[in-house]
Image 1 (tube, rainbow over the protein chains, first blue to last red):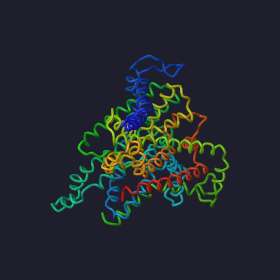
Image 2 (cartoon, chains in turn orange, yellow):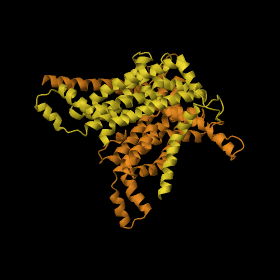
Image 3 (cartoon, rainbow over the protein chains, first blue to last red):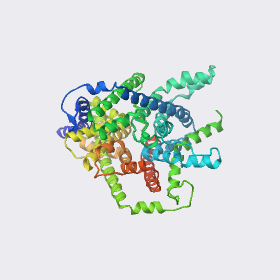
Image 4 (cartoon, helix red, strand yellow):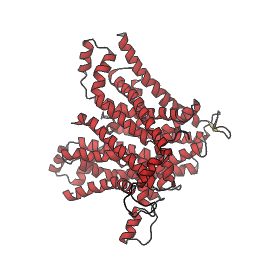
Length: 286
Length: 256
């Protein structure tokens, strides 16, 4: 019996130890740093303040937050509109094709998003594929500026994050009992009614998981605007990165991260409220 | 929607997902430094990759960290999954929540939290800080993979083993490990890929003397599109493809 206890203590201790040191303590340190003062000679001065949090309401930061929100929101909506019919079609296709169709979504999901964003650069740049093609066909006379615009960033974000929307949507559409749709049709519901009253409410968990999984990274993948949007587009991720590495203002960078984490918690809270009665974890699609 | 428009929609989205990657791979064979026009087939860019000593060192760093991080994360992540499934212990709910939060947390928040940790502990940024960070962010993915396989198992199996006198250690070695083997390998492969692909967390927790592939590519890509980068990205894409297929093979049984 003691040996049993030993094994059990051993495994729980290792797990707890690791996650405490490398997940809990760092989060705590992050929060503490956000309450400190930025020093001129050293990184942080041990002096408590809430000034950093007040700074967040500075017009410059608010503008970035708003911009980041809009861009991430547009990306989420774009992914949802593109992915919903797509996931529906995969979920309703014949079983023997399903595996391969899904595999084709999983491959880009696993591929480095840096490589995929780089591929977008090669397509959109002034002497890139798309311009060369359009010139060759004769639709345009001079190359148009596509790279280094907000649209390019948006395309890049949608392109990179689309699989994260498709997979949870697929998981919840796949589980849907199709007899409900047949029943609704038999009872005289039209297509719009079926969509609004049956499909959307029943697949809401999938929709919400997909939105959370897309929205959060969309605000923080700093290398996508870096590569596609030039320096003009700033996401929250870009600001945190520059506070840490260029301005070396760690407390401010930490404050923005804490704000971001709070935002994430709010989204999760809403998610859990909607999801309460269903006992499937949102990450099951991994 | 009729059949044809359905098919067209599916194809259009797949085209959107794959066209850029295929273009990238195709142009890594294009015999021209600047033009996007096709100038003929060449392996020149792959040759210059192979001859680039600097790049070889960086690639070695990435593979080393990837293998070690995947192994570490798989060991701890598997223990976590088994503990969560079998035992009741202090803070079990919290551990569940923590793993969930780690999966969904933005990479940048994890990256800078770890950066602050390492600077507080005066650990210099380089191999060790990178390895510890990679193990940490891979653990939850292994736990989820292994846990989902555990959840489908018959609990009576463990009771029977216990009745027959097996200790917890024996159950782990003789029953759990063989049962979970495909999920453990799948978790390892997933961790390896995540480690190999990570940009954001590594960006904060590694130093200049220990460069890894994604960061190297990031700095190369910032300068512009170059055929060598195309070749390098194509090689990495090929590697990812192999890993995905291996992963699918390992988890196949579970589905069918």
